[in-house]
Length: 317
Length: 258
Image (cartoon, rainbow over all chains, first blue to last red; front, side, top):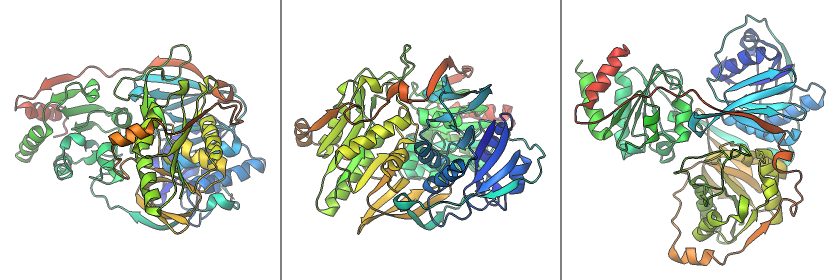
């Protein structure tokens, strides 16, 4: 099978989601990476993880990836190199590109997947629903390219020792009216300490904290445990903390050794982002909160009482 | 300035979801409510039209059984009218078909200067429909907007990114998907609720809009199995008696985290 992976770069290296998808793609067939931008910094690493060919659009010139990269992919497909499957990461760029491409190719998209397998020409994907309690397996029908989007950390990333791939230019064609949006400025929020999706301990706060100022308790506890602070969507939406703190469906997927949920009820949105943690501690006032259904240690209580005592006990050690 | 908002009517998220054993689609047979994620788009549309000093907010929605109760909530907030696409043939429709149907409904309304949608629904959370609608309509789009202002004949958007946010400009007409929390949705007033009862909702079928095939026939996917995920072992749940923090300390000690 001819398998493409939408590949992304962060700070001069392929993102972990990219390496995970390349590793999985190797088990399905011949792997091509498709980069929205310049691939020179990461082509070697993409080859090491199994890409024998890399398409690169070059600089997007301020165009948003969704419209630009999908058009570049369509141009390559129209040019005769049509993949059987394209794998995307479940994140902003992946979602936008696959959406535009699905219309251009008139093909369905299956999102939020955690696994894929191929048996002959039949390709199936697995999708957890209802917060991960139920697994739905779906098969693509009709002709390819099949478009599938995967949650980060669905697969382990392992290098294959591949050599340098062939790098082929795949320029963005004229976008017409659809290319109207232009990025004028880029703002990067500074972060300290371990990265949220790599930390061994994650302490997250939710609406149960009551007010933005109380989030400080979460940060203090995270620091004491050498972990990273996280957040539920509710308090990100409320503007208490930046989006980069968000754990869940539309945020980061984390799989730490210990996850502490403070004042988080456990909406489906949140649970899909953290239920892969090895150990889960939950503190919530409502004993019916769904988070207790997956907690290894659940404290039915007020975070405003439990957290200060916990912090003090840890500081005194 | 005219704005169309895509709204989804969903089963109450407070009650647990279930699959219809016959079709393996999400059960939507009870009363449906306005997806909270969409209330932000409705509010933003009302504010933008208000600021522009003229125009109106219209709704498009797709739902089984001619359900309008969720749309009535948005009409009560201040939207003027809506198109509802309701058709038994739509059951099993994938996100792409949904986008084609909503795009046709938008065209039926004569289009708009700005089309707003949430970033994803709270029940299906595919998250692809807004961008798919933009592509079907041949429009530019800005996704994941956390701030939207209209300046001249364009929009200025602060777009959430993995690392922070981008400032993006885009000429109108355009589609913008907005994150929850972008504005504070108003509660419908009693007057608004009464007025909503008589606001026009044009109910049409997919065939009326000329969109075929729809439902399972148009989906290019089939569900082959539904199973239970491996459940996490039951944990220890205790009521805080003032000393519960010591339980956490010893739990962390056992794991050698401290």
